[in-house]
Image 1 (cartoon, rainbow, N blue to C red):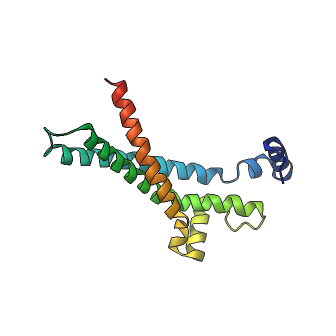
Image 2: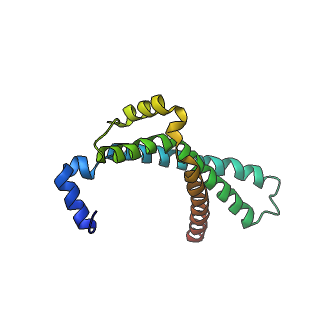
Length: 158
């Protein structure tokens, strides 16, 4: 099909132009990321600030760094799962827009219209297709990320 990245970019530009070719699905991608990052960070901070006092108060004198690591691990996992739950519908729309317009049989023309179309034709759960593997990826990835983040931040602030 394509001989490399440059050939791919040139071919798409010639066939579909810059906007329809290179930036197809850009708007839902931006919406998806705004939803994900907002949910992700709010959930992490809320989980961490809720769990730490609950765990710290009875264990105040026997607390180790391991207990805080478990809180960061669990809070990170909650953040990944919540972010994925919130952004999956727009992720499905973005993927369908990119795939369908390439085949020139587009039934989805925009983010909001795509959400309504998929919900109408496939039901509510159609907006959550592919969520299980995404949960595994984002749940575990976020857990590891936030443990590493908190570790690095504690080392930098010492």
